[in-house]
Image (cartoon, rainbow, N blue to C red; front, side, top):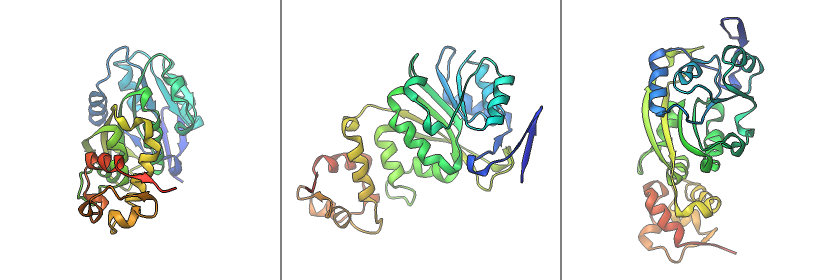
Length: 261
């Protein structure tokens, strides 16, 4: 069992919570600068851990909210940073409408590798309460999130997030700046929600994207024909694979199909 101690608190690292603690001041400074936070902003930090980002955020914002699931770490944050509004909870269970009662929030954090996708979709579903997200995650996931059409990384995650948000890969973070050291590198990504005509039919669009990619090597026709009326799509479109379509093309395809009854 790996243990990490900081000041008066020692914890047994829980892999399922993705507990790898950032230690490099330069990386911390770059993340905070990338978040473009200003005094008076409503900031939500996911998983503050031992407060590496927390202390840097407090240099800009006198008070903000942090969400921490680990009981010992929550107690540590309460004691070390009393001006922080600490919510002891799983981020997947947090009510973002309540967090944003005073206005839309800027989300920051080093998110657990094991639940990166659920967190990203939780934030996506709550984007009306969010101004921006500056998140550190597994490098491989960051590449998938910001991927371009025609690449092996481009898939469901990229299309679903990039349709509703502007996504930018910012910089890579090596594994040596964490305690304990993870097995893979990380990267910081910035996500900014945007308005789109698809906001009102998000659930059905996301289902369409999942079905389009359900078997990557198959054509769009083969993946969709059991689920949608695709008679309005051209022969050339139907013979392409999902990975070849841009975000704009996906939106246009969706507007010309209808679910089979």
